Length: 193
Image (cartoon, rainbow, N blue to C red; front, side, top):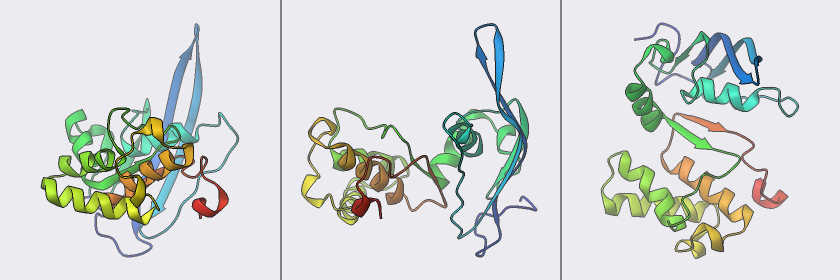
């Protein structure tokens, strides 16, 4: 078990610790260094925000911390995992499924699935039965004010409703870590709260 971060930590104990993160992207013949030796920590029970101008690397940092985008250098300790990037890609996927919720800027909804199915799918992958997944997904969608839109596909939903489906999908898992990349950008002020 990791000596620094813990899966079931008390409020204020380390949940994520990252150090020396470097990420480069190729742009033509040159490389653009987006993360330049970034260190970061987040603690259990805290809301930790990363702020900066567009293009400053916020989304890249979130992807590196969550196991979605491998940095060229550095390490990430998360929950009970010591150096996330030393795990195989399959084990990183299992870590994310078991512990992380994601709310992306672009919603990432499947066009052919209803709002209810969007949320049910991730719960089934976690091992819930079909009836348990349906119950939890329905409750989660009701909590974001979409109980009346359960059977609508993304094409029939407004931008704000799509954002709320994405939020419901992330929260339905009861994640230990929630990664949110501008989670309320498509919502009006009242729904954003």
